[in-house]
Amino acid sequence: MGKPTKVVNRIRALRFAHGEMTQAELARLVGVTRQTIIAVEQGRYSPSLEMAFQIARVFKVPLDDVFQYSDAEG
Amino acid sequence: MGKPTKVVNRIRALRFAHGEMTQAELARLVGVTRQTIIAVEQGRYSPSLEMAFQIARVFKVPLDDVFQYSDAEG
DNA sequence: ACGCCATGTCAAGTTTTCTATACCTCCCCC
DNA sequence: GGGGGAGGTATAGAAAACTTGACATGGCGT
Image (tube, rainbow over all chains, first blue to last red):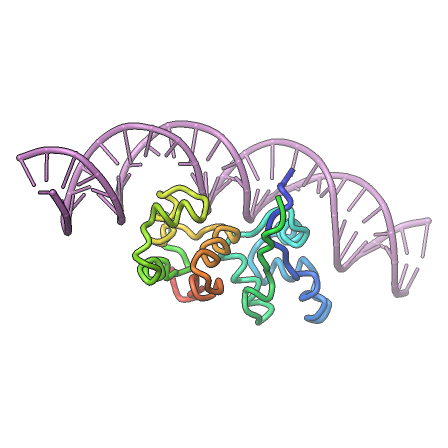
């Protein structure tokens, strides 16, 4: 299942916009494992608020720039 | 423990700024239980990203207006 | 004094998020 | 034609978030 999540994200785009940053590198900078990044990037589940803030911080953008709430779904 | 959380919030202030909205009413609008609102408002744990977006939506403000990430904290 | 409402606490339980291993495919390079 | 790096899958289990229900306190109105 995983319930496709109401929150969408631009992590993949932001990674490539930041020097082709790999999932492993992002995971290291955020302080989580690689599969957590994969799962969040794919929208299999939405991250904790703390992790969301840390991802935004890595990319030096506001949180709303990484994650958007989509009402239409589920 | 509960780990005092690196994320702080202005939920209480926003509730009072919105017609003295009660915790129970906010919980109803967000779609969670009253205890969850209490715990998040007190910073006992940080909410999921979805819940954070829903709270911001109730108050009609951006997410960054409700929650702030504070690096300094143990 | 009494009831009621808002806030808060505790404890036990479920669901979701996250970790740790392991393994798999595809592409590129030597 | 083998090795390595990047993305992805699967499983089991820990940790955090969230629920349900019961109970305690203080303020307010009657």
